[in-house]
Image (tube, rainbow, N blue to C red):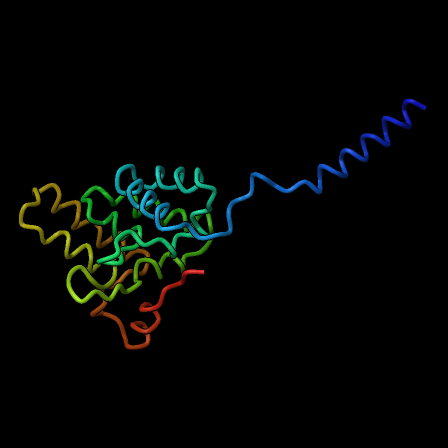
Length: 181
Protein backbone atom coordinates (compact mmCIF):
# COMPACT_ATOMS: atom_id res chain seq x y z
CA UNK A 1 0.00 0.00 0.00
CA UNK A 2 2.83 2.40 0.87
CA UNK A 3 4.45 1.62 -2.46
CA UNK A 4 1.23 2.39 -4.36
CA UNK A 5 0.78 5.69 -2.51
CA UNK A 6 4.41 6.57 -3.16
CA UNK A 7 4.00 5.82 -6.89
CA UNK A 8 0.80 7.92 -7.06
CA UNK A 9 2.53 10.75 -5.22
CA UNK A 10 5.56 10.53 -7.51
CA UNK A 11 3.42 10.54 -10.67
CA UNK A 12 1.37 13.47 -9.36
CA UNK A 13 4.48 15.40 -8.44
CA UNK A 14 6.10 14.81 -11.82
CA UNK A 15 2.90 15.80 -13.60
CA UNK A 16 2.63 19.08 -11.68
CA UNK A 17 6.30 19.92 -12.11
CA UNK A 18 6.00 19.51 -15.88
CA UNK A 19 3.20 22.10 -15.96
CA UNK A 20 5.28 24.56 -13.98
CA UNK A 21 6.39 27.56 -16.06
CA UNK A 22 9.99 27.49 -17.22
CA UNK A 23 11.64 30.24 -15.23
CA UNK A 24 14.95 29.68 -17.00
CA UNK A 25 13.67 30.53 -20.47
CA UNK A 26 14.81 33.63 -22.31
CA UNK A 27 12.64 36.72 -22.60
CA UNK A 28 10.78 37.11 -25.85
CA UNK A 29 10.47 40.87 -25.45
CA UNK A 30 13.00 43.11 -27.13
CA UNK A 31 15.41 44.93 -24.83
CA UNK A 32 14.28 48.35 -23.71
CA UNK A 33 16.39 51.46 -24.42
CA UNK A 34 18.24 51.23 -21.09
CA UNK A 35 19.13 47.58 -21.67
CA UNK A 36 20.26 48.39 -25.21
CA UNK A 37 22.64 51.05 -23.91
CA UNK A 38 24.03 48.65 -21.32
CA UNK A 39 24.62 46.03 -24.04
CA UNK A 40 26.33 48.56 -26.30
CA UNK A 41 28.62 49.75 -23.54
CA UNK A 42 29.43 46.19 -22.48
CA UNK A 43 30.32 45.23 -26.06
CA UNK A 44 32.45 48.35 -26.43
CA UNK A 45 34.25 47.76 -23.11
CA UNK A 46 34.63 43.98 -22.91
CA UNK A 47 34.06 42.62 -26.41
CA UNK A 48 31.87 39.81 -27.66
CA UNK A 49 32.10 37.43 -24.72
CA UNK A 50 31.12 40.26 -22.36
CA UNK A 51 28.20 41.13 -24.60
CA UNK A 52 26.89 37.56 -24.64
CA UNK A 53 27.13 37.32 -20.86
CA UNK A 54 25.38 40.67 -20.32
CA UNK A 55 22.55 39.89 -22.74
CA UNK A 56 21.97 36.55 -21.02
CA UNK A 57 22.16 38.20 -17.60
CA UNK A 58 19.20 40.34 -18.65
CA UNK A 59 17.32 37.23 -19.80
CA UNK A 60 17.64 37.65 -23.56
CA UNK A 61 19.14 35.58 -26.35
CA UNK A 62 21.54 37.64 -28.48
CA UNK A 63 20.46 35.90 -31.68
CA UNK A 64 16.85 37.01 -31.10
CA UNK A 65 17.58 40.62 -30.16
CA UNK A 66 20.76 41.60 -32.04
CA UNK A 67 19.03 43.38 -34.92
CA UNK A 68 16.89 45.43 -32.54
CA UNK A 69 19.72 47.01 -30.58
CA UNK A 70 20.61 50.58 -31.45
CA UNK A 71 23.66 51.97 -29.70
CA UNK A 72 23.44 55.62 -30.67
CA UNK A 73 20.39 57.75 -31.42
CA UNK A 74 22.35 60.15 -33.63
CA UNK A 75 24.28 57.66 -35.78
CA UNK A 76 21.82 54.75 -35.35
CA UNK A 77 24.82 52.45 -34.86
CA UNK A 78 24.09 48.79 -34.28
CA UNK A 79 26.33 46.72 -32.02
CA UNK A 80 29.08 45.87 -34.51
CA UNK A 81 29.23 49.38 -35.97
CA UNK A 82 29.46 50.75 -32.43
CA UNK A 83 32.29 48.34 -31.61
CA UNK A 84 34.08 49.03 -34.91
CA UNK A 85 35.13 52.42 -33.57
CA UNK A 86 37.72 50.54 -31.51
CA UNK A 87 40.83 49.52 -33.43
CA UNK A 88 41.07 46.20 -31.55
CA UNK A 89 37.62 44.96 -32.57
CA UNK A 90 38.76 42.50 -35.24
CA UNK A 91 38.48 39.57 -32.83
CA UNK A 92 34.92 40.66 -32.04
CA UNK A 93 34.07 40.74 -35.74
CA UNK A 94 35.39 37.17 -35.98
CA UNK A 95 33.48 36.18 -32.84
CA UNK A 96 30.28 37.61 -34.32
CA UNK A 97 30.95 35.64 -37.51
CA UNK A 98 31.53 32.44 -35.53
CA UNK A 99 28.38 33.08 -33.51
CA UNK A 100 26.18 33.44 -36.59
CA UNK A 101 27.82 30.81 -38.79
CA UNK A 102 28.99 28.02 -36.49
CA UNK A 103 26.67 28.38 -33.50
CA UNK A 104 23.46 29.55 -35.20
CA UNK A 105 24.08 28.22 -38.75
CA UNK A 106 22.93 31.53 -40.24
CA UNK A 107 25.56 33.08 -42.54
CA UNK A 108 22.88 35.14 -44.33
CA UNK A 109 22.10 37.13 -41.20
CA UNK A 110 25.80 37.78 -40.65
CA UNK A 111 26.12 39.12 -44.20
CA UNK A 112 23.04 41.26 -43.58
CA UNK A 113 24.57 42.67 -40.38
CA UNK A 114 27.82 43.54 -42.16
CA UNK A 115 26.00 45.08 -45.15
CA UNK A 116 23.10 46.81 -43.43
CA UNK A 117 23.08 50.41 -44.58
CA UNK A 118 22.64 53.00 -41.90
CA UNK A 119 21.53 56.12 -43.69
CA UNK A 120 22.79 59.07 -41.66
CA UNK A 121 22.80 62.53 -43.19
CA UNK A 122 26.43 62.95 -42.07
CA UNK A 123 29.29 60.64 -41.17
CA UNK A 124 29.53 57.81 -40.37
CA UNK A 125 27.00 56.21 -42.68
CA UNK A 126 26.69 53.13 -44.87
CA UNK A 127 27.78 49.54 -44.28
CA UNK A 128 30.25 48.21 -41.75
CA UNK A 129 33.11 48.72 -44.21
CA UNK A 130 32.04 52.34 -44.70
CA UNK A 131 32.06 52.83 -40.93
CA UNK A 132 35.49 51.23 -40.63
CA UNK A 133 36.73 53.62 -43.33
CA UNK A 134 35.35 56.54 -41.33
CA UNK A 135 36.94 55.46 -38.05
CA UNK A 136 40.27 54.58 -39.65
CA UNK A 137 40.55 58.04 -41.24
CA UNK A 138 41.19 59.65 -37.85
CA UNK A 139 44.54 61.45 -38.24
CA UNK A 140 45.35 60.89 -34.57
CA UNK A 141 45.51 57.08 -34.86
CA UNK A 142 48.77 55.32 -34.16
CA UNK A 143 50.39 53.20 -36.87
CA UNK A 144 49.34 50.09 -34.93
CA UNK A 145 45.72 51.25 -34.86
CA UNK A 146 45.81 52.04 -38.58
CA UNK A 147 47.12 48.53 -39.24
CA UNK A 148 44.37 47.02 -37.10
CA UNK A 149 41.69 48.92 -39.02
CA UNK A 150 43.25 47.88 -42.35
CA UNK A 151 42.87 44.20 -41.42
CA UNK A 152 39.13 44.63 -40.82
CA UNK A 153 38.39 44.79 -44.51
CA UNK A 154 39.64 41.30 -45.39
CA UNK A 155 37.74 39.84 -42.44
CA UNK A 156 34.49 41.61 -43.31
CA UNK A 157 34.79 40.79 -47.03
CA UNK A 158 35.44 37.14 -46.20
CA UNK A 159 31.87 37.01 -44.90
CA UNK A 160 30.23 38.93 -47.77
CA UNK A 161 30.73 42.50 -46.57
CA UNK A 162 30.79 45.34 -49.10
CA UNK A 163 30.80 49.11 -49.13
CA UNK A 164 27.54 50.83 -49.97
CA UNK A 165 29.04 52.20 -53.20
CA UNK A 166 29.59 48.61 -54.40
CA UNK A 167 25.91 47.65 -54.19
CA UNK A 168 23.49 47.20 -57.03
CA UNK A 169 20.17 48.99 -56.61
CA UNK A 170 18.56 45.70 -55.57
CA UNK A 171 21.21 45.13 -52.88
CA UNK A 172 20.88 48.73 -51.72
CA UNK A 173 17.15 48.21 -51.16
CA UNK A 174 17.71 44.86 -49.42
CA UNK A 175 20.27 46.24 -46.99
CA UNK A 176 18.46 49.51 -46.28
CA UNK A 177 15.84 47.73 -44.19
CA UNK A 178 16.03 46.51 -40.63
CA UNK A 179 15.37 42.98 -39.50
CA UNK A 180 14.03 43.75 -36.06
CA UNK A 181 11.31 41.34 -34.97
